Length: 365
Image (cartoon, rainbow, N blue to C red; front, side, top):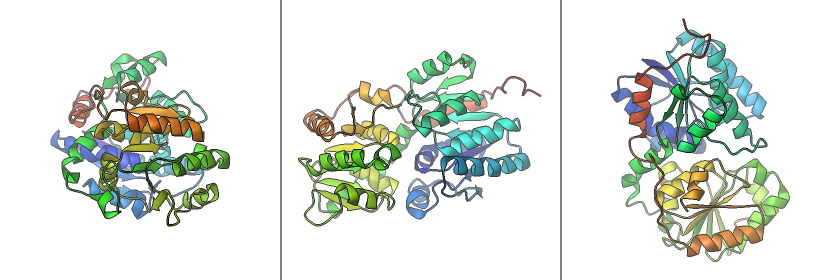
């Protein structure tokens, strides 16, 4: 079996880390096409190195731009690649623009699409990722789901149950397979912070960063945190934070740092007293490393993390975030791991692929 795996952004890289060796062990010829949606060293190269991911067979150089520009450019380049290679299937991951571009390009020329992490829903159409999820799943021949609820979502949307495979959360497998590698990694210590003595923050979604009033509320909550806050921040976000009152000046309760690689970030999450984020992936990683999380969003497609008690939703309001952080710091660090969030997800993906990818209606030869 010959497949092309599309990646484009940080969450994709983490998810294909454990997947590529599992596919190879199953005898599946899988090669990576990197769209270049995240293309600099801090957002791409370091993850390939940390996760020991094979070098991409193709780098498409899509780069930055609006959602339409990124998606359209990636779609055109992927269509050209697929027409030349004619793989048995195209595997797309998650909900980024590269995911949608791959599904559109492949379905247009009759290459079956496999979607890893299918069926997640926030039911918030203001989120570009929700649009990507919905459209991708309607174009997908094999849907690989991370939670049982995702199966239910897809069936309610009219997807044939025979196309759905509940494989579990590949992000969770990546965490489990890398915990031993960070066992002695003392990232917080090198930054002068004590384990369980700081809050880790990551805020990057436009719904927060591009609305000054919301970002000001988030900044106020972080500045009032009862523990020091470490905030690895992307260069794009740094001036926005400064306008909201966080400039990383000496003596501030919030310390800004450059973005960190996957293994360093995993160690920082493990050692934090709590995490404040708007990242979908970090909600899952926090759940796996046993660190309570506060998610600054109106909703989440990772509802299972809230259900098991690992996560709390908080609107972009200083008081609400502060209350949620107080609860997170006072609560426990043990909860039941969600079903099939284990180290066998990539094996189940391989088994599903080898069982055969059913073409969509009208696409059979």
